[in-house]
Length: 278
Image (cartoon, rainbow, N blue to C red; front, side):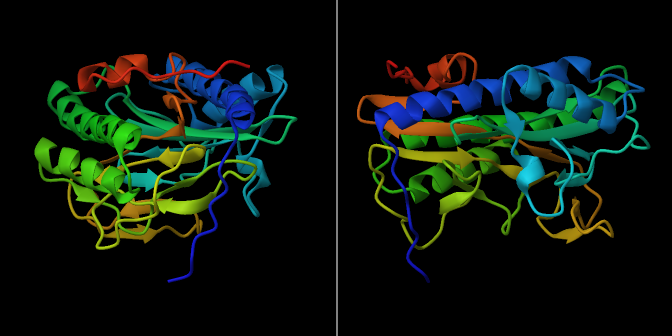
């Protein structure tokens, strides 16, 4: 296995990354508020793009070779990398996962994702899909909480997997994982959503990562659709995808893509995020 090249960030770097994180958060908030029956995923894409541009940044997804959109929007059995389209119309009861990122003029990136059940559908179906979403969100925060005190990076993966297994019988994607974030949206190190034999790199102040559980309500097996982007569950089971960009510094942890820095999500773990001064 090749040695990962991890670039640690200074405190001033992390402060600048917070700007990218808040812009990403604002775009996702605007999209979340717009999700309703009859809205197309391309409309959601336009909302995210307008928000990012209005705040003086650019979409970093558009910097990925061959990708032309600001968000990925994945519906029901689509786990990740769904391409926005005017023909992809949200229906009541759907579960949609939205992934988005921004890059600031200073060159720093943010990356985050959420899942939401579209209101107004069959109550039983909505409840089932909400359980998938809740399991993913809980696992995300369990991983972030572990990152706050961990000494080796795969303690995060162990915490994510433990949380998912405690929530029920869900499939954890094996080949789609979290990553470092910085001057590039995707950097080393790899951040697994499950326990591995390797304990992973030692965690040092200045490590900034994206933790992003991707799960299904059935098998972990997935397929890539004909568009060569969208990753879907092979068995057609529903899915969810949650993500935050998180910094570990000498004073503590700071969730860069959460409006409150992670206060609400980490409260149950007795962890208080520590922001850095500019």
